Image: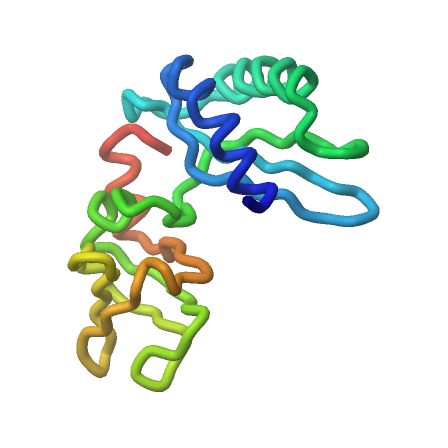
Length: 163
């Protein structure tokens, strides 16, 4: 099991018990390692600086006790933001209708990069509408996915009170 998978399994239950959902765990950097925890409120209310501080304190204690990472690192806690990464299957349903960028590990219809309107999930694949038609990108092959910052997205997020 890789480090990010182990961290995910360690951190997600703690966040859930506090009323948050884990969006992404990312560990990067060799000379100045950073552990980035991206979370959002389970009640869909906007994340605040106080939310991030509370998560940081709680996870610092948990990580100190469990000690899953050798050596020093910086813990960074943030919200996903408006042009958020899409990391969970439910994200592709929640944000259907908005513009997104996807990158696949494996070529799909001769390409690895896609930019278009999210349609949602179809089985174990993401459907995205491109200028040239629809593409189905298997979830298992996704390298990255994120929303594209557009006026439409800003208006929708602002209307929900999530900005």
